[in-house]
Image (tube, rainbow, N blue to C red; front, top):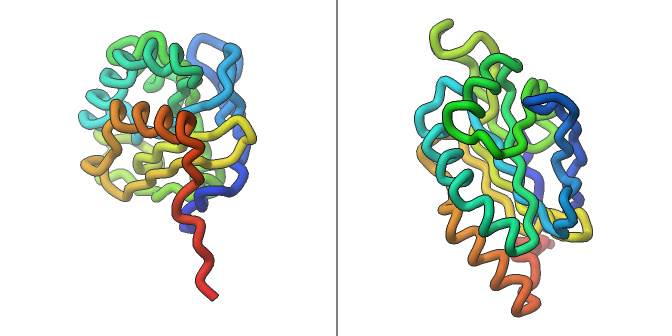
Length: 175
C-alpha cells in the first residue's frame, strides 16, 4: 500500500450510487468547489455507522461552506443500501469499490474475520479533501476503524485553509 500524498491529483473514481446512477469521487457536484470523500469499511462496522451518522448531521454545514460530501465502500448494493437507509439517508453513497480501486486510493485493505462480518476484502477508513484544482489538500488514511479525523475539525480546517491561503502541508521532499 502506498498512501496518496497530499498535493497530488486525486484519482477520479466513478462508482455505482445507491438509488441509481454513479457517484464520482474527486469531482465535486452541486456547484461546490471542494469535495470531501469519506471511505468507510462497510455495513459490518459499528464505528462506520456512527461516523456516517455524524457526517449526515454535518452535511448541511459542509454544503454551506461550498464542500461536496460523498462516501463510498466496497460493500455490494444491498449492504450499502442498508447502511444508507439506517445511518446516512441523504449522503451520496458509492458502493462496490474494487480492491484495485481501494489500492489506487492508497487505502489499507483488510480481509474479513468471518462470513458474518462480510464476504470480501474491504477498505479501512480514509478521508480525502480535494480542492478546486482536483488536488489532495488533506488526507487521513487509517488501518483500523478507531482512528478517524474529527469531522467538525476537518470542516474548520478547510475553512481555515481557504480563508488564510494556507498551503498544502506535508509535501517536503527529502533529498
